[in-house]
Length: 131
Image (cartoon, rainbow, N blue to C red; front, side, top):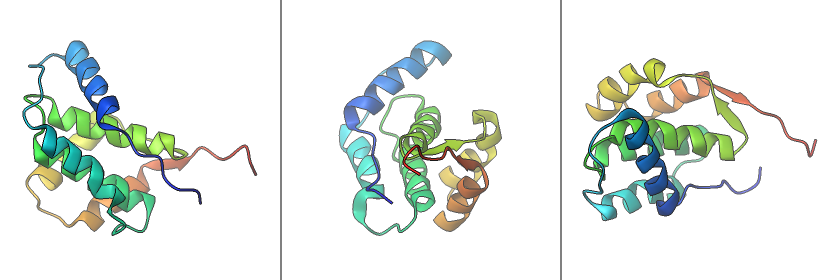
C-alpha cells in the first residue's frame, strides 16, 4: 500500500465554506490550531490501518470544534474525501453517520476502535487500475 493522501488545511477550509453555503450556518474559523491538530492526528504513525486513521480524523474534526459552525458536517465530509483519496468510497450518508458522530464521537461513548469498525463496515474498495 502506498502512503496515504491526507487533506490539507486549505482544502478543509474550502470544504467548510462550501458546506456552509449549501446547508447554512455561520461561516468562520474558531481555532485554526485545533483544525491543524485534527488533521495531524491521523498522520501521527499511531494508527496502523486506513480505517483507524479515518476514525481519528472524524473524531478529531468533530470534537475539536475548529469552526464556528458545521463541525460535524465537515468531519463527515472530510473523512469521506480522505477515504476517496485513498481508494475507498464511504457507503453511508450523513444521515447514516449522524448517530455515530453525535452519540459516539462527540460524547466519546465508545473507543476509537468502534468508530474504525463502523468505517470498515461502510467502505468499499474502488479497486486499482494498477492491478
